[in-house]
Length: 483
Image (tube, rainbow, N blue to C red; front, side):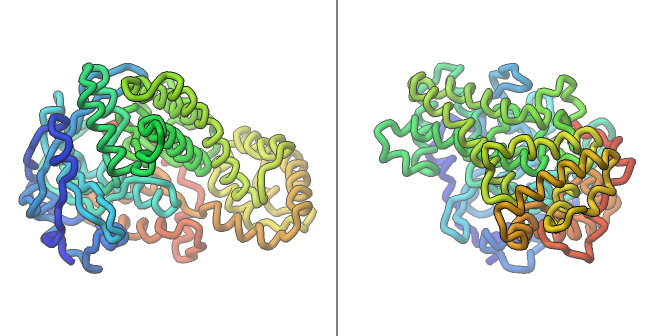
């Protein structure tokens, strides 16, 4: 199948009048295919070999796909804790919805499509740099089985745009089950447009939470599911050291998807206070703060849904947050440490490794991957040579190995660890290298990273260099919201 054969249904356009503006894309010039996700293409029924000319034509804004109805959605949001009454799609357009290979409706969203009524003072463009970062991040989190929006392709151009310096414009076609955000509900709640609020909630129930329609209180049941999905998503982030960077409520998905990749980062040396966004001077969105911010954002959503969900119902739903977060995080930690479950008296032993890593800045991903290869039947592990505090690590190792030996079947649990602790993550320096090559017209590094990130738990000896410690220069990379 080629993209021209897609059958658009456009449920948002047809069912949510008054929540968007109809806008046509503003084309970028001399488009070129920079990156393409074969896995995403297959999920949409596309042929194995992409039609580069068609992708460039339709997703650079030069032509509209038959049946698409491009719109810019309006929403609000709390940005760094402050409520902003109108935001919206300032540089992206929802082209419409189609059915994927599983028969589910999915959104096609074109980022960088030009100015909309919600651009404020922006130019409506995305730059090549940020488009590549989002493309690679969506590939990386998909490989790690973390809920995320996906991207079909990146289209580059020679259209100039001004950021900190002059850059070239690009577009990215994003795929998601929905682009419903917490901020959609905030917008209509704070404008006292409760009819529109209900319209959005009913849309969400029909399309994304139909099982809740069978409950005595459908809206409350839906909110409870949002609470649980959000908590479980953040548990996945914490387990691999992923830090979103800008957890504003307008960047929070109602379906618990990772959305709006900007100044994100996978942690290198373990640091609980890790901040990937150099604009986040107060550390509001640091790694350690993400669980608390998730809860705070859900409280904002609870307020926005208050015409439909009582205070008592919201409080009951929010009580599920910590249980869901800790439950999923405990499952993931058990897998990372090779344990059948986290027991009550395991806390001191597990936290001991994080304390040692924090003290020495040991690499999070490499430490757990190396641990996955160690033989707990041996008194001594070669890992201790990596630590300045060798005696501290030796003591930790003895406590850990005794815990592992007590549950038995060491070889089985070692295999579980290797399937849980990735060897490869998308480090910032990797994305930066791919960006710099792409800015020179070479896209091979993007394709290589796609191969690596598609199988992050496999050894892939041909890509061993991507599992090494990051170079020193990577510590000086600065990623901001414009990234």
